[in-house]
Image 1 (cartoon, helix red, strand yellow):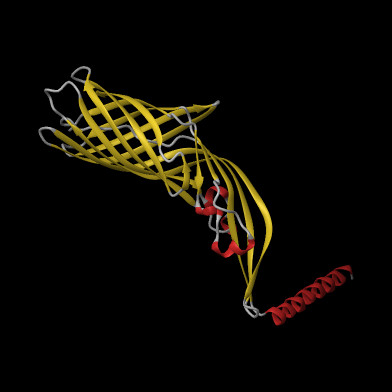
Image 2 (spheres, rainbow, N blue to C red):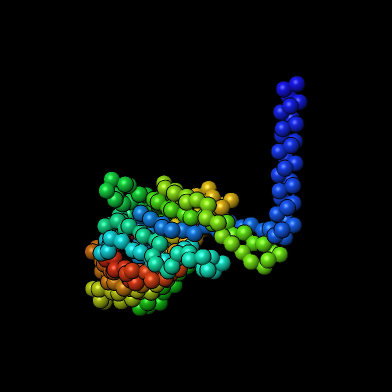
Length: 303
C-alpha cells in the first residue's frame, strides 16, 4: 500500500510540473536557454617556454649538439585582458568591463638542456627539457621539433617547428550566467547562477615556430644572429576545468619573440652564445608590460 501511495505522489507531482511548464509556454512562448561562462580572474604561474637559439655554421649531418642554457626574467609578472571576460549578449546587464583578468607570475630564471641531431645536411631533429623553481614550486617542461637548415659562405639559416609541453599552475574564478530568451515577447533576461573556483596544475601541449638567421664569417672572432619566433600557451581548457557543460572557456595566449645576439667559438667543438629575448604577448589586450626583456646565455657542445 505504501508503494502505491508513493507512486501516486510521484505521478501527481509530475502532472503538476507538466501543467506549470505548459502554462509558462502559453504565457511566454518558446523558451531557450544557453549558459555563458565569463572568466573573472585567471592566475597563471609558470615560465614562458622559449627553446634555445640554434645557429647554423657548418654541417650537422650525423652530429649531436648538446646545449645547456639559462634565461632570466627581468620582469616578475605579466597581466592583460582576454575575451573571456566579455560577451556582447550580456553588455546590457552590466557585465565585466575591459580591465585585466589574466595575471601571469613569471620565474626569475629558466634553465634547460637541449639536444640537436643532424639527419642530413638540411634536416635536423631537436628535443629538450627545462627546469625552474618558484618558491619551492618546481616546474619541468619539454619540447621536440624538426628543422630545415640552409647556408652559404657567410650566412646560415634555420626554420624549426615543433611542440612544447608546458607545466602550468592555475587559479581560476569563473562566473556562469544563464541567458534565457522568450520568443513571444522578443526579449531576454539573464539570471546569475554561481561562481566556479578551480585551481591546480596541468600539462599543456602547444606548437612553436622559430626562424634563425646568423652570420658565419670564419675570419671573424665573433658572429651574430637574430631569431624571430612565435609560440602558444594554453591558459584555459575545457578538459582541464571539467566544465564543458558550462560553456566554451578554452583560450590560449601567443607570444612573439625577437632575439638578437652574438656567438663565438671557445674551441673547435664548443661555442658561447649570448643574447636577449624581446617577447610580446598576442591575444591579450592592454598587456602590461607590452614587451618582456629576458637575457639568455647558452653553450653549444658538438659531439
